[in-house]
Length: 217
Ligand code: DX5
Ligand code: ZN
Image (cartoon, rainbow, N blue to C red; front, side):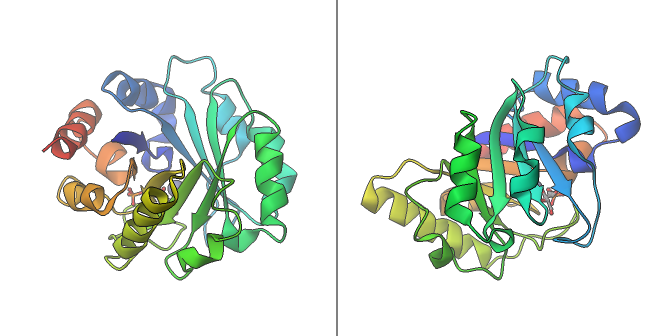
């Protein structure tokens, strides 16, 4: 299991220290939640905030673009530390071309689906993606509760991946905690986003270790 703490829930007044702490405790990625106030009802931050972390010794970036017309901004999020750039199926008019655009930078391309979007919507691109991000909350905010029906989508994606011998990774995003992480993993999730469970905790390092430990049970 790989853990991607979402910086949306971090204390931005000491963001550098907090992401370094999460990294040294074992975080595999930093989940960068970019929100434009149009595609989702919240505005978070843009590329300059992510790039302020470039010189720090941190885990690579798992960029989640919750924005309209993501094509315009892909290159802004390309840095040495960018591992994934994920766009929403619901935000792309030419999804296949957008995914190709991400890959043209040598970066792994992800596609995200909201709780209301069936995974069948990914049929025509599923062989071209490196990551499928299943939203287990409605996007826009950290600290929400996981929507149980979304686990069925994780199971479907895991079954399909196995049956077709595909290599996309399955990421779940929203409401994952110590209490539900084993359920989420047995559904087939491989990368776990956790915002409030990590950066909302009193002890960030302990929270990272607890999640990693809970996943090995
Ligand atoms: C929601 C974001 C999630 C969120 C996760 O729109 O995409 O990444 O920050 O936060 P928690 O883990 O607190 O639900
Ligand atoms: Zn996210």
